[in-house]
Image (cartoon, rainbow, N blue to C red; front, top):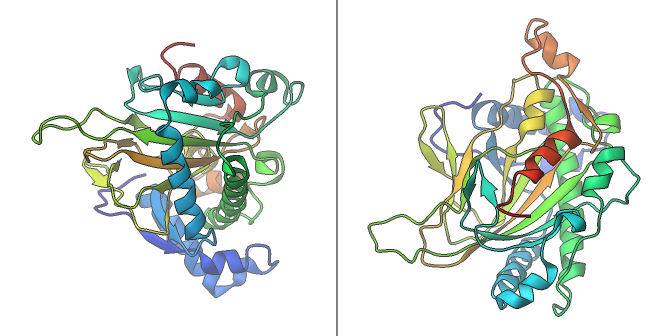
Amino acid sequence: MATDFKSIPIIDIAPLLAKWDDPGMAQDLGVGEVVKQLDQACRETGFFYVKGHGVPESLMKEVRSMTHKFFSLPYEEKLKIKMTPAAGYRGYEKLKENITKGLPDLLEAVDFYKEIKKGTYGKFGEIMAGYNQWPQDFPNFKTMMEEYFSLCTDLSRKIMRGIALALGGTPDEFEGKRGGDAFWMVRLNGYPGLSLPDDQENEIGCGIHTDYGLLSLINQDDDITALEVRNLSGEWIPATPIPGTFVCNIGDMLKIWSNGLYEATLHRVINNSPKYRVSVGYFYEGNLDAVVEPLEVCVKKRGGNRMNEGAVYGEHLINKVKTNYVTM
C-alpha cells in the first residue's frame, strides 16, 4: 500500500537485465539488490523510475518527436485514423473525447493495441480484434513505433520477472497462462499548454485513475513536469522528468495477483506549462483471457487470507474501454 512518500525512487535495473534468463538469477547478488528495490518501490509508492533499461535514449526522444509532429497536423489529417469500435478501439481521439470517471480529459491521443484476429480469445477477441491505424504520410512512423513497442514489450517482461521474485515466487510467475502471450496497449498522449492567466491551473489533462494491467512504462517530455502521484496523505508528488528513464507504475491486475501486497497508486496529469506536452504510455498486461487471482505465495504471506476477488483480465479491460469515451 502506498505510504507518505515524498519522492519516487530510481532503480538501475541493468543487473536484472544481464541475468534475466539465467537459471540462477534468483541467487545472483546484483539481481537480488534490484529485486529488493523493486519490492520496496511496489510496496511504498507503486511508482519508480528505471534506468539501465537498454532502450536507446535516442529512440525514446525520436518517438516523442514523432508524436509531437503527429499532433501538430491539421485536425482533418488526424481524423483519417479516427478511433472507432469497428477498428477495435484503435486510432485517434480528439481533445476531450477520452473521459476519466465521467469527466473529459484535456488531451488528444492515439491508441494502439496488440493486433489480434477475430475468433481468438472468444468474446474478448470479438471486441478487441483489429489492426492498428497508421498515418499515411509519415515516413518511418510505423517502422519506428513498432520497433519501440517491441523493445518495451521485451523490457516489461524482464521487469516482471524481477517483480515475480520480489513477491517470493519463481521468475516465470507472470508467464505461461498468466502472461506468456501478454496483451499490450500503447497510447500517444498530447496535452495542450496552459492558456489561462498565471494564477490559474490548466484543466486536468488526465483525471485521477489507476492503470488497468500489470506494468506501465511512461516516456515523457524531458522539460515539463505534469504527471503527479498521490501519496497516502493525499499529497500530489510530481514525477519530475529524468532524461533517459522510464516512469514505471503497477496496475490493477498486479494488485490482485499480489493479494494486495502491492497496490496500484492513483495518479493524474495537469500540464501547467505554456508548452504542448507529449507522453508515450506503454501498458503491459496479462494474457487477454488470463484468470487473475492471488498467487499462492502471496496468499501465504497474508496468513492464508485472500484480500482481493479474482477477475478475468479481458473483462476488466473491455469494461474500462467501453466507458472511456464521450461518444462512440
